[in-house]
Length: 619
Image 1 (cartoon, rainbow, N blue to C red):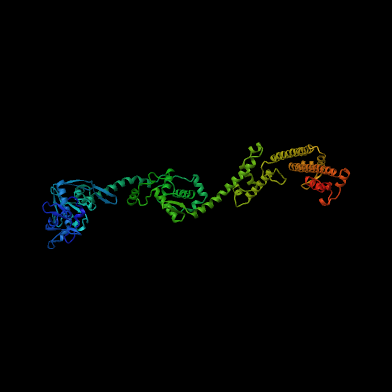
Image 2 (cartoon, rainbow, N blue to C red):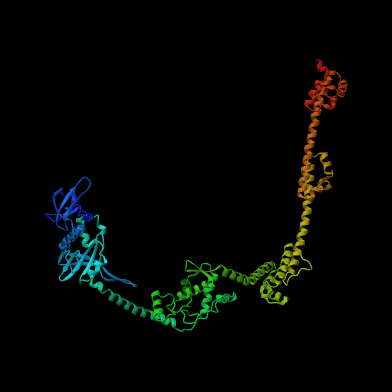
C-alpha cells in the first residue's frame, strides 16, 4: 500500500480501467506503477475477481479488463478496496469513535450523549441487511452498527431510509478531505480523527421526547421566574408625585405638556403617573443634544426610583413568556420607554439615529429655542439691569452703596410705572428701553464728570457722588492751570538762558525779534511758554540762526584774508598802496567787468584776480 493514495482508489471508469488492483497472491492493493506489464502483473479486479491486464503504454498506465469481462459494478472497485481496508482496520482494532449526538429546536442544541468509544466483537464487509448493503457492519453481541464512508457522495435519502428500517445504529465517516492521504495513513482517520456523524441511533430516536421534556422544564422555570415580575407589574402601589421637582416647573413654563400625546390606560412598570414620566422623557430630549436610548432613559428613571422593583429591563424570554401566557400588556420599563419614543417618532417630534438613539428633530428644536428665548428675555434683562446698576452703585460712597438694594430699586421703578416687575422687563412694553436710556445717560454723565439740571438720577443716590466729583474736578483743574503756568515760565526761562549763553549781541536781538508760529506773531519767549513743542521749535529756529551766523562770519573772514593777499600782491606789483587801491576798484574785463575788491571772496576768485593783474602778466 506504499504510495497509494485514497484518490487513486477512485480513479476508475465505466470501461473497467483502474490504477489500483488487488494482488492475486496477497490480496493487497497494488498500484499500476508497481505492477509488471501485461498478465505478468497477476492482479484481479476487486469487484468481479477476474484477471486484469497491466497496460503500460507510452501515454497512459492502467489496469484493464478483457472486453468481455467488464461488469457494471467494476466502476466501484475503489469503494470495495476502501471497504476492505476499513474492515481490516476495524477487525484489528475492534473500536471506533462515536461523535457527540445532539438535537436542536428553537431553544438551541441539546446534547443527548457525548462523544465516546464504541467497542465491538466482529466486523463484516458489505453484508446484505435485508434490502440494503451497508459498507461495513460491526457487531457487539446482537447489536449492530452500520458504518458508511463518504468520499465522493454522502448517503442519499433512499439508502438512509432503508438503513432506518433496521434496528441498528448508523454512522457516516467523511473521508472526502483525505483524498491525498496514503492508505497506510487512513486507519487513524477511520478510527478517530475523520469527521463523522450519527445518522441513526436509539438515542436519536428519543430526541423528540427529550426536547419536549426540556421545553416543559423551561416553561416551568419561566413560570416561576415570571411571577415576581408579574406581581410587580400589576401592583397598585402609591404613585410618586414629581410635580414639585424643578424640571417639572421648567417644562410647564415652556409649554412642553401641550406636545404630549394622550397616555393610555392600564398597568405600567413605573411608580410615576404616565403623563409625568412622559413629560420627563420629552424634556430630556429637548434639553440634551447627545440623544437618548430607551435603556438609558429607563436607567435614569430607575436611579430616581420611578421604576417598580425588577421591571427596569427583565430578560427578554421572561417578558415574552409573560405576554404569551399571563399578561398580554406586560412591558418592562425599557420596552415602555421605547414604545413611547416610537410614538413620538410617529408624530414626527423625534428621529432615530442608528435605530436606537433618539433625538428631537429640527422643527421641534426650533420651537423649543423660540420658547426659551421668550422666557429668558425677562431674566436676561434683569441680569443686564443688575449689572449696569451694580457698576453705578460700586462708585457710590461707602454708606450709600452698603444700603443700596437692587431688588427694592427695581420694585420702586415698577411702582412708578404702575406695572409689575415682569411687565417692566417684558419685551411687549417699552418701559425697559426707557429705563436703559436713563441709565446710559447717567453713565455718560459719570464718565464725563458732567451734570445738568435735566438729568434724572432714577432714584439712585448719586447727588453726593456728583458733588464730590465736581469738587475734585475743579481742584484738579486749578492745579493743572497752576502747573501749566509754571511750566510755561520754565520753558521761556530755559530758552532765554540757552540763547544768552552764546553771549552775542545778535542773540540778544533775536530774543526780541517777533516770529510767526502756527498763525501767531510773538517773540520767541512767548512762543516757548505756550507748549513744549513750541519751545522745541523755537530752539530749533535759533540753532539754525546760529549756523547761519557762523557761516556768514566764516565767509567774511575768508573774503578778508583773500582780499588782503590780493592787495599785497597788487601793492607789490604797482609799488604803491594808492595805485593798488585804485586797481582794486577798477572794473576789469578779465573778471567780467567786476571790481576785484568785490569779486575776490575766496581762493578761487583770488586766483582769477591775480591772473588779471598786469604786472604779473608781464613778468
